[in-house]
Image (cartoon, rainbow, N blue to C red; front, top):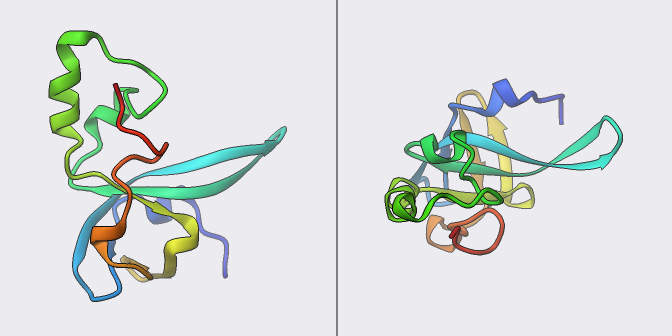
Length: 112
């Protein structure tokens, strides 16, 4: 596979194996494997990732009054594990599973 940058992925439409639209790539989840070395572990797909861009993507706990609002804002987000990506094509990311089987939260649990 050729080198792909985050900029190449963000904004691409994500479709499942049946061709149903999951959303667009809103964010890329990476893991640091060594100093200066990162690997992609997944994609956040959906309509918007505004809450995640504010820093409430998983490890940062929002203030209590905002939890419900941020959960509502993130209701369409789906996490695509990198192993589930079947192809990265011109303008589209194809996943090898049905949209209904995609995780809702990239870290395995609903944010607080």
